[in-house]
Length: 291
Image (cartoon, rainbow, N blue to C red; front, side):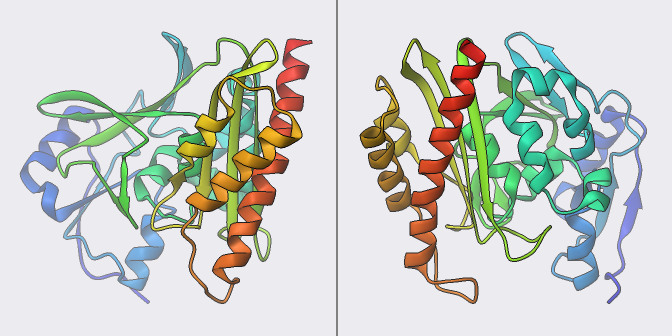
């Protein structure tokens, strides 16, 4: 199919892009890599009157450490994350997880920020960002605001981003202690959307968990943060009992539906198993860092 007719703007500066959105934000869609938006346009699931292509704006593709965070620009592609030495050292979960994103063609063009703003509840990055407690940096003509990822997703393909805003970067706090993460994904074939996926990140203080993040994919109307499961880990050593309890709480937080990929009960049990596996893997990696 062919998209419905639309206007196209390719601003060369952020100021120009924000000016366009101030005038036509309600009618417009921002495009970075286009790997999420273009298929929707072709199927006519999205029919914006204007596409604002930000791919030519300089300074938005950096991946760098900044004031206790790693800052990933809006035009940083999945493949840039895959190749980033900074992320491999500071946030190896991201480098591990990027291989689960679609296929090499998509990873060469698609962007982290675009994927998160697309807000597909079956998307991988949303849950990973929830586990890492990321923040989005949004810019408009009125100035800049920082949006916590927890609460950013409002529903399928719906976020708290305003029509006149552009997310210029995602910021992720750098762990201050020994930390490790893991991403587990069940898919029908390579490159498919997840039937269920779980992202886990833990930071240790000695032998006990100081911080924990658990994000769930494809088991709700949005990517979900398993908050009760996270809290059950804080202040405890990751023994089998603590891990099993957190895994049960994460499964309870899931809200899947029966469909051709499996029953809701099956998907909840996959969440439970993946959280157990993820926590054990995250613990092993955190202990490697400490050693």
